Image 1: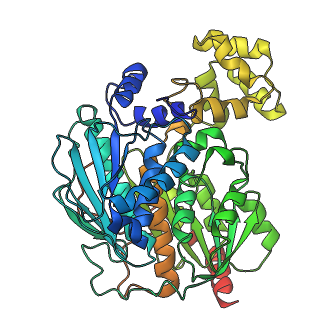
Image 2: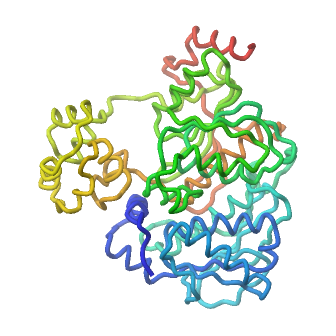
Length: 504
């Protein structure tokens, strides 16, 4: 058993939510805490069961070094080989051999005899995610990833809350519940279930192909009957630290362009994925005055989201993760309802990039500003200054020789490659993989609902979930236009431009 080569980023994510976090004790607990993934022939022969197992395996392999795979009948043994292949592609050193588990995730219809391990049964029925700590819930027969994927995220979240219960005060595991990603009720209700074999995305852009964007891509990859153009907009390649929560990524994908990974994932669907390897501003400028029907936004910062809204796509769907919650927001009429920018207008002064970096590396602000502006590669002397100021071993920093200070900050601090360096930086906040995956699946579900008209009654602007607390039905929040009256959606020129876009 060994921890993954991106483990520091996983530890960084955990450090933001676990009280009394200690890196050495954290590693020791994971090493002593196998968590099992169990399944039967019903799960392995069901399209939804297969989807749940796939995502559960991808999530567990990114965090736990010991995940025993437990086929519950003779017919499902062969599927263990498939799941092991998925998990070893993410973490080659993961131990999937039989061991006495502390907690067990179970997919299928088989009742597992009590062994002292906490058992969480997960499954789905189309749009509906099913979860129970009491007994099997089964998996549906539809090629629908939404309930299946959400169930995997909910189950893995309950595993996490079990393993680290003493460091998550007030966070108990869930009682049995079901949740539809179509209606956000216990069942689909009166919603018009979309035909997933006849979806037309028209011309849509997926903006941001990071952790949430990977969740979107995972869900859309199951929609074999969808059609339309899907622009894939991101300028970054995949970094090793991204494996911590990008559910589509494997070791072989490191240094691959994010757009290429999503293109490969989606090219077998009916969609036409179109990679664009640059930032949204460049994409929007290249389009010129042509209106974009829809943007689905999976970006990291408020400023980047405002830039998308300022380009005036006709409809915007957005998803986010924070340490304590995740969610989606709907912005379908710029003129009449809260736009995306309303949610992210800055309030008060915030530290600039050079101020945040100077705070972490403990170099003078003027020097940091100069290094960033001139993109000066870090040499051994500069790294020695940082090592001395931050009380880190120089040998730990030397691999970043020749990199710019910005790259050093992104990889060493935000990427968690140097554990503990700048953990309090606002840019170092790192959600857990199951949080990002669920945000992406919810965003993909909103896209399908939007193109299909699957809801008779629109939901409020915001829908939030907290996977670190027991499930609550207080999910929605209505958002009004910004009360400052200074948002772009309250500007007459932007309103006229939006009206022109919608009529073109």
